[in-house]
Length: 316
Image (cartoon, rainbow, N blue to C red; front, top):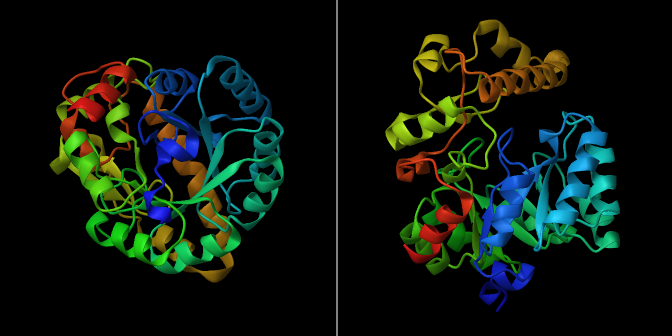
């Protein structure tokens, strides 16, 4: 049965865990440490402003990683660097690509030729069947506990639904902050788990001290949903600043994102503006900050190295 194939077997790693790609958080150091700890890490291509920066990061990853690493690609129109990023991923033969927001068809075609695996973000069965038919190697099942952009279904519902109806491995994304939760996902039939939020407050992460401390001092009940960053719902820490600016788009923002003619430009603009805002939040220690995280920050009690967090996930 396909469901018996674990992420460890697919990638040749010790523990079936992906240090999830996090916009503006994931970096080379975190991926190198993930490998040393017996797991794999993935970084969003968009964490690098230019193709030159991205290529330099891949060079460094190729030199420093003694295990597999992945790249997360936004495969829709809002990512104007997509085609170039894909080419660089194939040139450098990254171990796997995780696709988000759009059709992975072209990515799968190109990656297959280069011998690169493709895992696709999915939130429901219809889309999972679609990407499986396109030749995806695994599904990243994004559930409603995920940090950042999340899915509509609980993991209890989503994992069994996908494992029953699809013939490729299912990797669960969202809702894992400790060993118990990881074991739950695996018991439901997941081949592994993609885990992000609990790795924000790590010594290797380059985000501001304030962002890390927010992950330590806030918990699951402090996570709120905003659509102001990218036009799509996204989970953030409900800081005083977030409360002040509100979490819903205003009338004009709403009109522009619904109006057919303006929609695609507005989406691209609001995505760009959101990235700028997130960028500012991630790296400046001002009071005016918006920090992405999921409810699993409940388990973050201190700023620790990546290796220590992996140990607690594996040994409890």
